[in-house]
Amino acid sequence: MTVSTTTAERVVIIGGSSGMGAALAAALVGEGAEVVIASRSADRLADTERALPEGPGKVRSLVADITIEADIERLFTEVGQVDHVVTTAVDVEGVYQPVASFDVDLARKTLDAKLIGPALLAKHARIAPGGSLTFTSGIAAYRPSPGSSIVAAANGALESLAYALAVELAPTRVNVVSPGWIDTPIWDAIAGSAKTERHQQLSARLPVGRIGHPAEIAQAMLALMHNPFITGTVLHADGGHRLV
Ligand SMILES: NC(=O)c1ccc[n+]([C@@H]2O[C@H](COP(=O)([O-])OP(=O)(O)OC[C@H]3O[C@@H](n4cnc5c(N)ncnc54)[C@H](OP(=O)(O)O)[C@@H]3O)[C@@H](O)[C@H]2O)c1
Image (tube, rainbow, N blue to C red; front, side, top):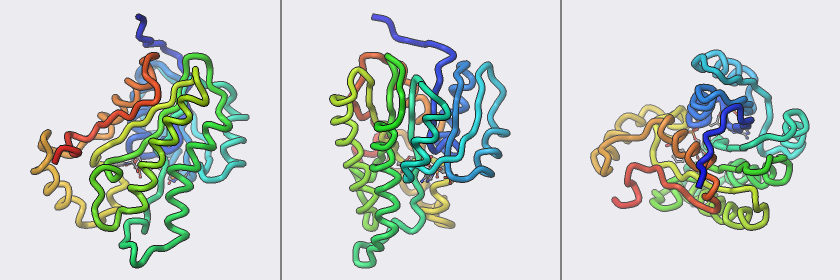
């Protein structure tokens, strides 16, 4: 069996301007890959591109909203065939809310980014032989808390989407990383000033005794991208959160 460690791979990361997506871009540039980071904000992309560590690889930015089909179609027309496509994209601003105050527009925005967006990637990406799609679900699907119902549902549905796509798009491989709590900018939207306290509370319960780092999720994604025998799999990188 050969486990590929190919360099000069071409990888598109939607959500590459922050958190896990930016950490994956950094790791890939270090491996010599050609990376395209995409998200909605040109400024955010430019800041991230400037902050990425030097490496043998190359990075460039393209503005695209994963919820808009024309953006995704244009993105892949521009980049052509690639080896791997990854999405971490979501904007959870306002979506953690009790079902009693359920806001349909916010809920749809989350579902569009986490579920319909990945389906649009599957529709428009041209993946080279041996390549893969990697999506990002999350612990809310397994350990929901009050107020997280839409995020939990989106994550669970995304995993089912990946199983179905792994069959339909074969031999392209389709996998999911399900992160636990990871210290990224998303927490400013989820918890604001309560972020540190909530992280400390969970850290005390987790088997690993701490919240995760974005680079640890990037490593999980690389494992799925580079192992040619893995498809239709959800890799839990959650510090044991599902056990407590
Ligand atoms: N951090 C955690 O604790 C945690 C736990 C479980 C699951 N997750 C999941 O992990 C994934 C990554 O989270 P993260 O913590 O890395 O988040 P993050 O730091 O907030 O990054 C989210 C990225 O998505 C982009 N984005 C948002 N909406 C988009 C859209 N419609 N189209 C294109 N790009 C969009 C953002 O850039 P722009 O604003 O420029 O668009 C940003 O680059 C998410 O799916 C999240 O649900 C996170």
